[in-house]
Length: 422
Image (cartoon, rainbow, N blue to C red; front, side, top):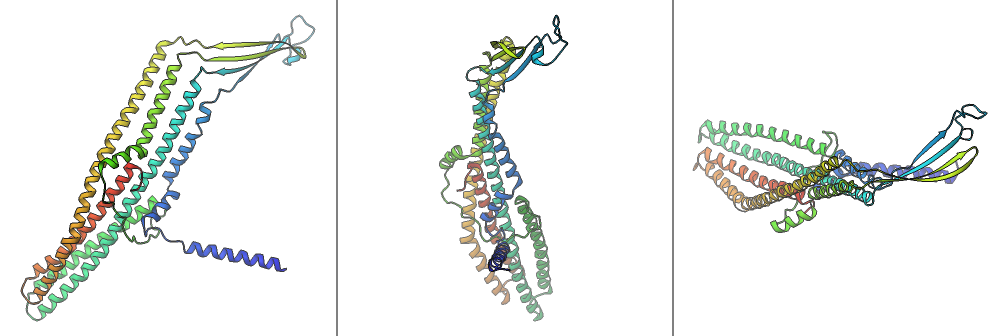
């Protein structure tokens, strides 16, 4: 084996090892929202199908405005060769005469442009629909990530509170052993531990379901591993209805798709009106006699639009379709604006609730619990007061988490409505 061959094999082995190492070190999705969105964009089959449909619609534009294919007609006259010293034949040179007619249909002026414009509007609408599909998918991924974050933090918080309950149970056990409290305090602490353990099982089940939901959105096996979510996204503080309404009208892919459907309906209506005028066909025909062409001719064909009642019905139908598309667009705009207003109010309420809980309720609950624990150890309060203080800590922390996730859900919905991230 020569030196160049050994070097080539060594380089191939090194490249293979580097490739395998990179694949093994590829980060697991789930730690942040961006990793989930990147994975969904390239793997989700629903979004891929809409992209292909939009691509297919774009390919219809050029054929819509093209001329119809010409036709060729061959007419053989006197194939029996009556009166001549020849038998029947189907060869052009051995019949009385053969006429070759090439006919090119020509739509009335403007019809091809209207067909092309209508197809172009439908293609743009398909692309906008594909964008709307991605925006909707992204909103579902954002919502699932926020819920998955809530489930993970809830599990961790419940385990922490279980540790607090275990400490309370130890204090109650010690005081019961000293004869300072009744056995009921110990039993209530154990009941509280059992109840919270049962709740923890439910939370872990919900966590597993959300895990499977995210994998379904990403087109991964339901049990494929996901990294623990690290943090939620930042929620903008300044969200005004006027600014977001303007972005909704300018950027919403749902509204854009419906507006383009109105344009396509208008072009189709104009095309139906143009059908009042006739279409044409031009033809040229050489006539062969024997082995040569003996004469040339041209033809003009015009269709006569006599069925006016039928055309009037078609025109009324096309106008009604335009009105229907406009009504759907207006209804959609009203619906999106209403949803936008509701989400803005809801996200503001969630933000204020989260701030109030974090700055006031949580510190107060911590202070109340520590005071109750000290007082119980000194025999100044009963066990029920201590237990309620522990429950208040859990409620306040879960309330803060709930408000944070609610803001994330509302933010995802607003971004779905306006068609872009805030």
